[in-house]
Length: 155
Length: 427
Image (cartoon, rainbow over all chains, first blue to last red; front, side, top):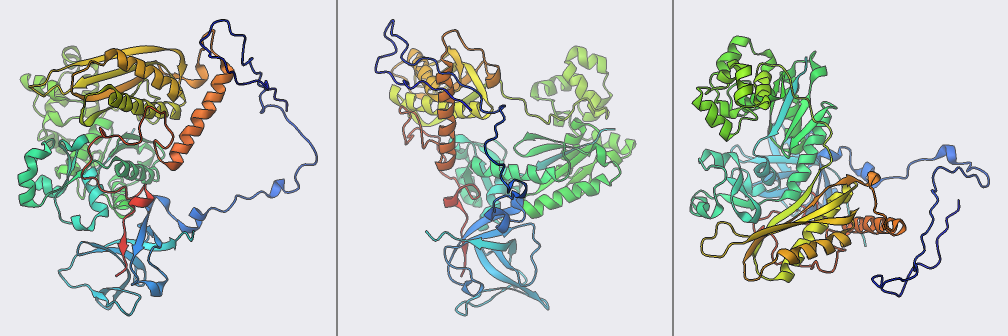
C-alpha cells in the first residue's frame, strides 16, 4: 500500500498570474483496493464477527408504523413514564386492555392506561392524584397507538 | 395476464395534518400552496362544503370563518415522510411497484392471480389505515389506465365497495354500463385540450373512447391516445416504471415571500437555490455541464414594470462543486439583473448532466484537486445532513432568508424533527 503525495500542496502565488511554475505538482494516486495485503496473522476473531448493537432494534419492532411522542406531565409516574420522556408508539400493535396508549380525547393528546373490561371503557392514570377518564356513549375516543417503549437522554 | 393496482391516498396532505392534531378530528381542513396562495388539498368536510380546489386563500377567508375551516401551509417534510412510509407498507404486498406521485403508487399484482384480488386490496387498505392512520382507495385492473379508472370508481363509490374496486371480476356487460356513465375527461392521459376535442367529435364517455376507431384516434390525435384506448380495452401497453431514471436536469426555483429589489438579496437567493440543486446533483452522483439562471417580476401585477430574463452559461469542466456552481451562477445573475424592478421569483437549473463516472475532463483540468474537492463536498453534505440544511454554506448565502417562502400556517414536522415531535399530556 503505497501512496505518494507531494509534500508541497499550497502556493502563496495567485493562480491567475501568468507563467507561474507548477506550484502544486500533479500528485500520483495508487488505488487502495485491488491489492491484497497480508501483514501478520489473520485475526482469530474474524469468523466470529458480530454486528454491534443498535438501540433502534431494541426499542422499535416495526419502524414504518412507529412514531415518537415527548411526554409532558406526571400522571403516568406509576408506569415509570416521567415528564420529558420520549414514548415509542407503534400503531401496528393492536390496543388491548392493560396497554399504555396514546389517545385523542376531546381535542387532546393523552397518554393513559387503557381499561376495557365488562363493558367499561376508561383511560386510567398511574398517579392517585388523577382520576380515571370514563368513556361515555357520545364521547369520541381515538386510540392513536400503543406505547411499546420509552427513552431519554441524561446529558 | 398482467394485473395492476393503483393505491391512492385520500386527501393526502389534509389527512397528514389531521393525523397528528387531535383538535382537527371533525374539523374542515385545507392545505395551501407555496406562499400560502391557493387551496391544494381539502379534507372531506371541506369537500362537502363545496369548496373547489385551487381557490385563493384570501378569497376564502370569510367562508373559513363561518365554517371554522383551518388552513395549513404545505408541510412538505411531513408529507414526504408519510409518503415514504406508505410506499414501505406497500412493498410488503408486492416487490414490484412504481411510485407515481407523492400519494399514488402502481403495484404489479400479476403474480397474485390465485388470490381474491379485491380481498387483497382490502388488506392493503386496512393495513395503511391501521399502521399509518391514512385512508387509501385501491383500483385493480388489467392495465394501468384501467387501474387508475377503477381507483376513481372506488373513490366516488361508482363501483366496488369499501374503497376497493376490482375491474378483473366485473362482467363485460357491467363494465360497459359503468364506462358509459363516466366522463371521458376522467381517463388518465386525457387532458383538458384533448377532452374538448373529443367532446366535439361526440366522444363524451369513457365507453365512447373505448369503442372509437383506434386508427382514427392515432391519426387525429397521437399514438399516446391510441395506447390509452387500447389500455381501456384491457390490453396492457404501459409497464411499471420501477426505476426512476436519473434526472436530466435539476431545477430549483421558488417565489419569494416578499418582493426583492436589490442584487445582494437576489444573490443570496440564487446561491441558496444552487446549493440545494448541487446537493441533489451529488445525491444522484452526477455532474452538471451548464447552468441556467432566471429572474422575473410578478407577471400578474398590473401597475408595476415587468421584466424577465434568463441566461445559460456552460461550465469549463462538468462539476458538482457548489463553490464553482455558485460562482458561475452569480456571474450569470449579474448579466441579467436590472435595477428598479420588483422581483418575485428566481430559479436555477443545472443541465447537461452526466454521470460522475463518465466525465470527460478538459485538457487543463487538475484531477488531483478535483478529488480533494469531491471529498470536501461529500463532507459538506454529511455535515448539513447531520446538523441541518445550510449549516455549512458558501458565504454569499446568508443564514436568514427574509425573502423565504411564506409558510405562516405550518404545523410542526411531527416525524422528522426532534423539536417538532407531537407532545402527549400525562394528566
